[in-house]
Length: 140
Image (cartoon, rainbow, N blue to C red; front, side):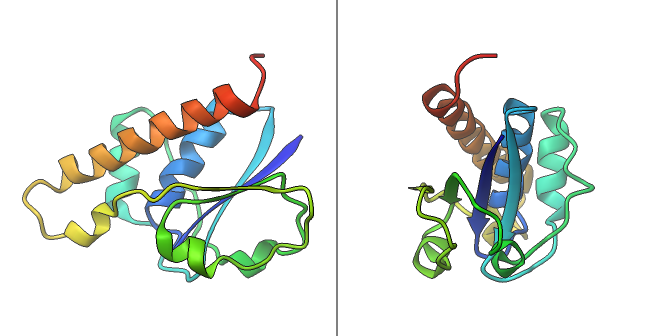
């Protein structure tokens, strides 16, 4: 089994959404982890957005990267520029590092269109997760 960690600033939204899709698409093919440079708690709007797409992330926890420094990762994925710049060095030589900066819908928490903001981010991450699977994993 491959080990994948997905990192963003606070492990509350983008990395959690990605965690949900990677877990769904790579079931039984990879161990999926998500973490933040900081720990902000799981964003309720991210939970609701994923629920609208049929994926439950409500049981996920918000974690910091230092909790996973002993895991030998195959893929280290950062989903925001801040996490990419602040990402710790994991003790692995084999990890493929991938960076993709996704729009942060949590910055619009008071928007009248908050559901649309989160769903747009969610859909972008969903496409990224599918593309990742096609590129790095063989069909089961």
